[in-house]
Image 1 (tube, rainbow, N blue to C red):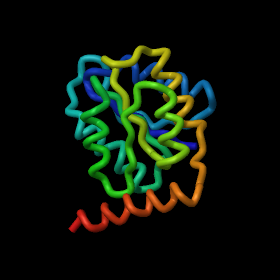
Image 2: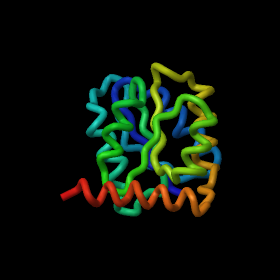
Image 3: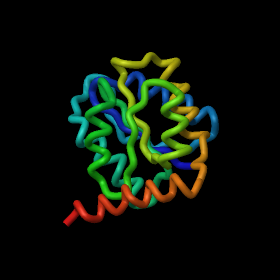
Image 4: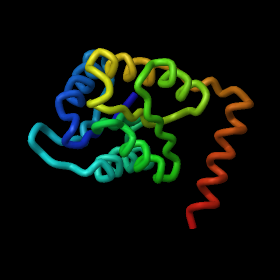
Length: 150
């Protein structure tokens, strides 16, 4: 599985911890984020991650900013992206199981490193249930997306 990860200037250290954690587990990680001291607007970071997912060059994405909110708002503007801002593992698990989310967002100013790594693990390892009721709802999201993008 290929995972693309991006961040803005609020989260270079936490991004590096996540990259290391994922690579230690054998995942291929594409780091599109910025380093310590570099500036980046969160919509630009979201664009880099979401574009790679849209192109099929990554399976899942992780975006980290100060709160995760700006990243999730930006990511959800991209066709085919279902991004969820999570700060606890229950939501991270259910967004994969029920919503087939493909981008996890969280905030470096909201969660510590331990929680961030737990969020990453749950998000990456939880499969989509494929349940008919969830399929129907995701299809409705896709329909809205098609109606809105003109």
